[in-house]
Length: 435
Image (tube, rainbow, N blue to C red):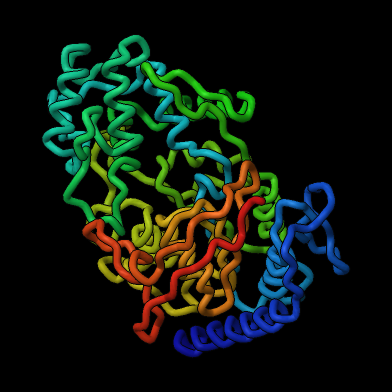
């Protein structure tokens, strides 16, 4: 079979399976509450293939529709797969797979344990080209006299330096309220998240793995709701895996899906957390920096021929480049349906592009993020699922201003979210929430 005929065959096979999935989903009844019953580690269908366990955390018919997707697109119980490539399922990590943020957990651990280094040349703007001059000056004032160039800063004992680092990272402002970052594409870069990775410069990946393992244990061992002292302030000090998402990953894996993580958190850190779900290091995509020998540097890796991280359109770029082998600027463009993931799950506006690219179902964990929730609630093709957070879910949000602020512009402004015909998506009510 020629390459062209093979591609057409795969596209036709995928189209048939997606059509069947849509028909099945349409027959499912829509309820207004989650399933009853205790969570279990997966159930079995009539043919012995794993399905999602009944769990009250699943809203409405979400579990049924996910099981329908698994049955139609998975390989379990089928004599011969319809395509040579396993169906691809992509998950964001922070807020999607876990409650709270592992990038935060690692950064706060580093500050508490004096693992952030003084810039090698004393210039904080070398840690991020997006730092404003004001932010660099504030960091130099708070931290500049505390350690020689390239050496760890005593942030565990010096609250002034720690507080400035935390303010720039957590609020994207200095302690005096000045903007800490500028000059970036807001659809392809989250400079604070990138900065947390850039501040790993001077350590090896083995060092960072050790930091992540220690921070992970602390945050899993801490009771829910724990706050930790970081500098003179207090920050979230606990993380939990979502049992329902753990079950979803295991169910997809058992049914032949290629499950991967796409996250803006540091790649070595995400690898540590993802390993507990049976996701291997080569299936984890996170923010990366270049190496100088064994040492990490502050130089961000590129994608699509430009500096970007796995954030919003940068997630599409990384998937297209690493999974599908698309190089150059074309990596930022949406690919044909037979060259995209069948499933995507996310919780923030930084997940809006890669989840929308999914061809079968898109699961959104509701954290009241405007662009993502506008897309999900508009549900223009019937493939979006919305679920409250599985732990301490949020209450109802005010209506989402989709018709005026539903799309994040590259310059940081907002514009209407548009339908394919160019008309604006109407404002959307928050319909899937706690309470």
